[in-house]
Image (cartoon, helix red, strand yellow):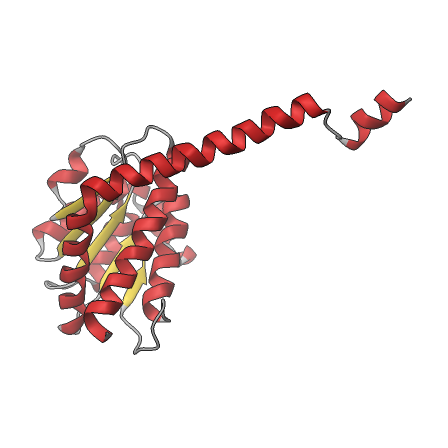
Length: 208
């Protein structure tokens, strides 16, 4: 009866629990290791991204951010940090996530192709001197690459957050941070850390 109750309630025996705790520790160590590698290799690039974006905002231009899935959520998160605030009490900054208007996204995907959902929005709203930040854990997302290509060809500054591989995305980015991991979850964790640091630096440059 005790074994039956344990199975129904989902209670783990000590061996199973120890195994899961070991998984937790391994995931933390892996995430920390990848972040340390990016810290050692990408610090200068992150500073340059922040300096460029601060100049974009000083010029009363805009930052457009876009990606798919978890990167779409990151795009919205980062835009919120700029428009509202991150750490400092300061004026709002004009950052827009191109992932939030379901009618625009679905109409473009339905009438044309999903590869165009970000490019068409940049064509509608983007101008020379603005900045476009594309997020792709693989570096190969067609809609992200296509939007960055259009941005580069039309005078926007182009920034990227990518995974470990050098891809076509690199050809269209003025600055790009690579995360040296094959695991999507680890790449996304580092992207979020970079985004927070990026926002903190822009605030410091403009308002400290």
